Length: 312
Ligand code: ADP
Image: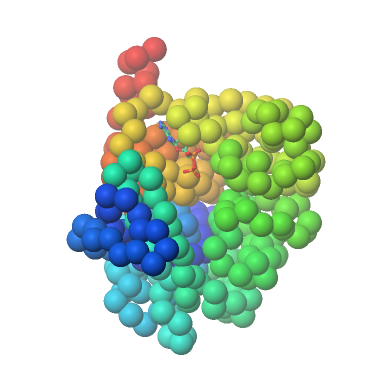
């Protein structure tokens, strides 16, 4: 019996968001809306999504000794995540994402990784008790790759299942890829990772991408498809549709999906069962503005499930 369903190892950022009529050209200044500051970063988002659903979750991440770091810690604690692995005290500020949203709703984002770049393999070694406690360890690539590799090895040594979302896309060592169960990618990440390897050019479609990604070594692959749901590849392809919802803001939907997926796998769901739950969590997350603020509790997910049953 594991003490934690899910350990998320990854990034924690403050999202600094300003609305603008249009984004400035080089050398230009434009006036925007009031600044809004939200907890974000793929790691913190995944942990918040899982904890909000009731998962016993911990986050291993690094923030600075500043107000943004405190905001991130408070947000994790508010949803009941274990923050003993939320490290601070280094020289770097908390990571930030500077986000401008224009009148058409399009984002331009500059990320300053800050303390995320200082999450080290040593930090992973010191966090061994968290790895030992966790049924599933979930990772993304907004922290140094050698730290990701160390965390994957620590998870494997502890007998934990590894879920990895290669975002932002980067080449992964074979031994890291080999234990991903699943590798979780959206369409954009699938295309970027496959590059010239896509067997039918870029137009093969999700099943072809999943099969090609699977040939790189992961134990299983999940391709998320936005409103279409997700495709699971586990030796054969299974399409899992998403419930139909009125989408308001898709920010952080993929993180909610992956956090929920990791949790359900930790509870012992099969991959297809876990994806069936995660598509509902992703769908619920797009019905509200923001990332962590939009994440559903178990009641909202159950409601979506009931509505879907009634609609059939
Ligand atoms: P990302 O946010 O990484 O780009 P996706 O857009 O594929 O990832 O979304 C992740 C999951 O969120 C999907 O698998 C789906 O369950 C849900 N989702 C996203 N957009 C919608 C939508 N418009 N309607 C319903 N569900 C959605």
